[in-house]
Image 1 (cartoon, rainbow, N blue to C red):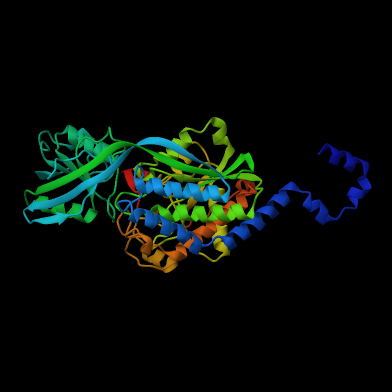
Image 2: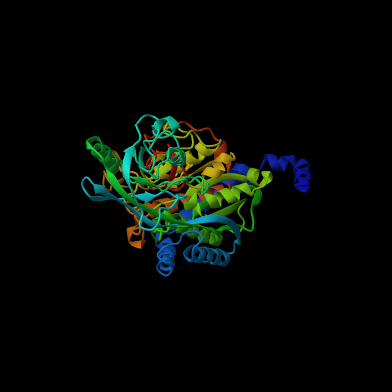
Length: 511
């Protein structure tokens, strides 16, 4: 640089006569924008949902040979992580495992039946970290907690002696599920059944193993309302069996980064690799994992010298409460946190009855949680502009804390990404906008055995792989858009997945 400066001083006339195009080539900001545009265009063109589908086939094959799932702490996840690690090594990345301990959970029984007055079975979902009933379950009368804004949250909600040895029926809302069942336990309840306050199944967590006090399960709003109506007519006797294995195990995140690029400007993208134990998790979240893997391969082919370091992560134990991303962020030094200039999350990007949702970085939709850290609004805008240029409809989705952006937001790292919906119900307006079926879940196979290779939407998959590719190509060279002001435009977005605050994907803990 000193030599160039001396030459410039010695030859002012030559510099004055230089063409505008020559001056532009020497402008670092304009060159960065040019390099970013070129790489983004190339990656979008080369990154293929068809090629990414081959990774999904591998994940399905792994699940088929390992008890039908790829849950953290299982052979299925270990094999999935090894596959991703090997692919990334082959592409030329610096790859590492990040090991951590966690409590593995596997539901062994979840059965709820009305014994009287009119026998029927009720679908129930065991809460993560619940206590277990004996084998065969328990039989007890049902008692409903009076409904208010904080149903079942305070000791005064449980009349003295009324709940002793009984099953407490508690409406969702006002406090965490852990607090509800703990209050019921303190009142002497033998178990707790929490019913939803919105449409869809209720899959939740009590937060951690120490919180669980009594067997606790979740049921739909319709079933809860029906039980309340039954109680209004007289006694209701239930049989409830909820049993869950909880065991300390070891698992790994997979972290890969470019060998080159300025570490002080690290661009990070992530997806969780683990499934629930109920199924192979091909959409949740084989889809995001495969999309990242495909774009990582194309980046390795297209760009050997990115200006900024690009880092990819495949998280483990997300389904247990974002444990992999939390472990990663907790182990970052203060410098390491400052070096990460953005985090983009891709979790469930091929839902069969999809919506195309972009995380609402500036809280322009006014739904749920507030805005993300400074820069999050720009990440949302950049994705929206990419989709708009391609004529692709989209909506905002709230930062509910449902996925692995949560730990990054907590330490002030700008965050964003896309999502195609989970157990939330598609509206009529969304069906007109995106196609698909109104009145049913974005992913009817969410957290179930049907989340397999035959139930991914290739159109949604392709759109979101394009989003990933464009972001990687752009930010690998140019971060200037993160400094450009955002014009706030509400999109009438919603949670895209059912409301509530969560500490794991679909693992709701509170409202």
